[in-house]
Length: 168
Image (cartoon, rainbow, N blue to C red; front, side):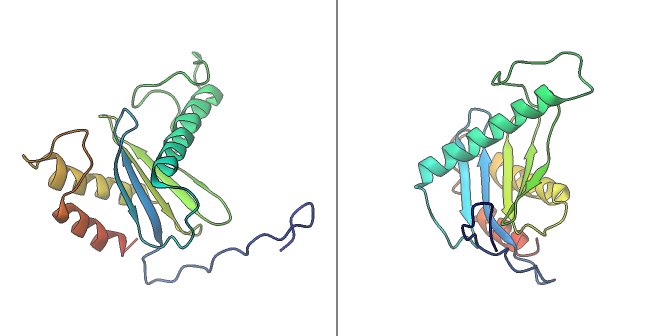
């Protein structure tokens, strides 16, 4: 496939089948931008170290939230680009798609951000993200041994998450 200047770009990934397991990566961030959980399933290419990857993803989300709030045609009050927003404030986006992946996003009222990167032909994942959040609440938030704001190391949550992601 040729791009404007004639440079070669990779072909689009194969179309998903009914077998599931189209998830590539998942992130869970708290309201302060701390990555509580990062999981990979089908990510063949690694270009950044984990810290750079987490910062880049959170920066992308911060910028997209700010941009969608600024461009919201229904809101009279426009915030300046780059001003942090409270959860639920401004126009929200749910996903975007490129030729090689789809990023689906959900932010909870408590500021937890769940990002799931999947195959580009994957459908709407809002219900799947709600289910993942319910797993998070059940196995992490209700766990008396978990300290809020620390990385998630709950094996029950990771097992339940892996089982569920196989169906996405």
